[in-house]
Length: 488
Ligand SMILES: *[C@@H]1O[C@H](CO)[C@@H](O)[C@H](O)[C@H]1NC(C)=O
Ligand SMILES: *[C@@H]1O[C@H](CO)[C@@H](O)[C@H](O)[C@H]1NC(C)=O
Ligand SMILES: *[C@@H]1O[C@H](CO)[C@@H](O)[C@H](O)[C@H]1NC(C)=O
Image (tube, rainbow, N blue to C red):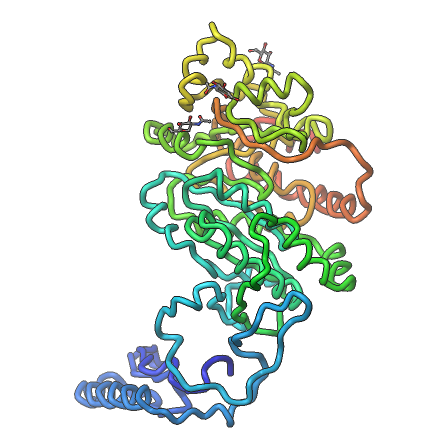
């Protein structure tokens, strides 16, 4: 048993269950304490009341009890340990006896960075390949920000890319829902340590970000979450180097496993989306950085938006790492003219954002254009509608989160995000391009050879797409891009 050596958890958990005969009876969950068994409901209401009372009394009595039975309990899993964060080694050792307390019933301030989950529980996905845990760590301001904003940022990350969240959380000032992926004990350990670092070093993360977690069935951690302290010499201005240092200690065997096993992007996207509490969600990848003031501007814009089937596209640029993040759209367009920024994936995969029409989008920075007044004031508006939607278009957009979910049968690379956008299009969504807000991705992307594993995943997903497009056709009885006809 994990973390429950006092045997007090779950007491008082009597509930009503249905018997075979269809009558209601009183069933008791805590089999180790008292076995009440099932009695017909109509036997006597009085006996039920007496039982309930004695149950409450017993519970109260046991809660007061100081007799811990930790010695009797085997330790298949480690309990919440108080360990030093030692960058060089992973702290271990299960203490032989654990002080008895009812700590888990209270919110203890200095435990706030510890994941309060039991890895033996969690919610399975449809195919029982992954387990998810909602809200394993929640920013102190997440709930109130979700009330004061109409839109949340939803994003997902594996352990080794998580440093990108630092800049994202500084630019996006509203609520943020992050879905995390960790496979096995090594990654889970690194993740926990790095989360402590992120939350201690960066107030925007501590305040705004809600983290959820997804783990693969084949690589579930064997150790329960622990408590880590931040070492004295940690450098808060180096999020990437700090993560690198932690990740570099992950074994090559684990790294190889990750390469061979697909990253469940769509599971993570759904997990991030569904933990947002606002009506609108802006779903991105973790390395997509919102422009300054995007949150406020977008929030203002959405106050007057009244469209269930609209997807508001926010254009994405890739940025040369030598420039600073552009202060506003005018600056972005200026550096793009110098070749230091360009539409995301323009060179790698033009269809990615082609339908956004950047030729048109950049025009409003010029005086005389009808959008210029908005750009000048930094006010968000619809620059134009997408008129040439094509299959494989995958912009980052804001929409009410009643949009179709991300199909979890697509895993790894290829067909994960654009298939969801495709379904929206078939479902009748309109895509509207916003200005002067944008997002940035660090690094100009150039075409390089795809690793074999990526090609394999892409081929697998392409096959699955043949099924998916027929399902979408059946769901909406529309085939606006002639996708189903073509294949006949
Ligand atoms: C962001 O908003 C603040 C306050 O409204 C304003 O002072 C600042 O100039 C804006 N920044 C940009 C990049 O528009
Ligand atoms: C993009 O917009 C420009 C200017 O409005 C227009 O001339 C052009 O045809 C558009 N391109 C596409 C591919 O729709
Ligand atoms: C955009 O940023 C530049 C500084 O890079 C500034 O000079 C200019 O006034 C800004 N434009 C607007 C409309 O805020």
